Image 1 (spheres, rainbow, N blue to C red):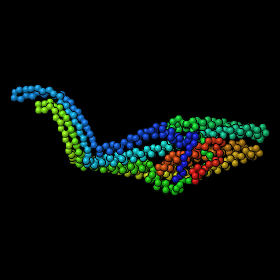
Image 2: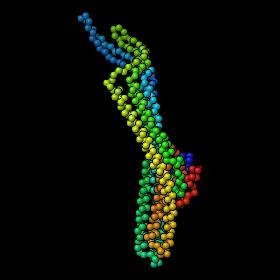
Image 3: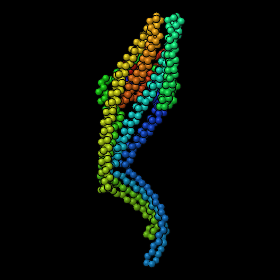
Image 4: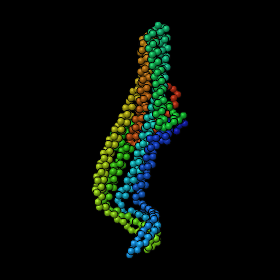
Length: 447
């Protein structure tokens, strides 16, 4: 697997704690929990058809009656009351047996759908969290770039006084500084928007939430390293595939259930009745009855045959839906796998780009002081350095998100994976964004 099992227990809050908070506050996940609770009742509903049914009734009426016989008439007025209880127990009812099986499968389907919603929540929280971290990193870099440009503007003024720089150099430094200052405010606003998007999912953010950025880490390749292995695993373990497979089984049972309506049914019946009917012959009566009732369906206007044909077509639809989910799972696994593998190369390339850009900036600064480079050369080199740092941070978060998506593609995204990410991004900033960090992914993973 990509991630080693790792439990992180820290005083500050991070991705795992945000995930727990989202389970309590996210309305989408709350709806999924309600759907799960409703789906779990399907098993009880299916079972109820196989259990005894008891029905009680109470009737009261007022009767006025005139009777004429032999040229004589007589009027009667009375109030009959009837109390009865009826019990029935299915003996053979194939349709209800199929209902029971359908109910049990619906429970499993509800659980699979909920598991998918839980993974979806983890990915949504991770995406929003990474967006917030990246926005914070971009703001830090904007502040650092502003300070660097401010120092460069001061350098230009000093060189101008020494006759090395020109007015144009000073104005260009000033203009780029003002642009950087405006960009800093843009990044600050972006950070606030990202915070609100995360709060939309998790509610109020914890006061002690970890916002430490990612420093150097050694990205690891997916394990297993074969894309085909991930695709095969996604065909059987992807939660959407699992749900679609259950849905196909449900459709097959629905065909069997509809066809069962052609079969006779038998049930045991028992009843007891107490009647008060003050007529001429009697005032009260008690009766009880027990027997077996057999019903043989003969003709219902073609309804059963039509419903059977419909169920067969829905079964075919479910079969195609399953195939579509299998293919989609392969696409998702491929996309995530290539995101991880490509992220490895891009991170290494951008790390080297940052190192090279830093060397270039220093060289340009030395060259400017010696009159060999212009102010524009220095400013351009600084701009490239900070652009490379921003690209590197974005790629690091993209890489981690791809890893989580890859685990989700085989139904394996859980708390351990979020805790592992916490171990990376949960380090409090004690220095500017750079290229040095004591802990690597391999060290944290125990590999």
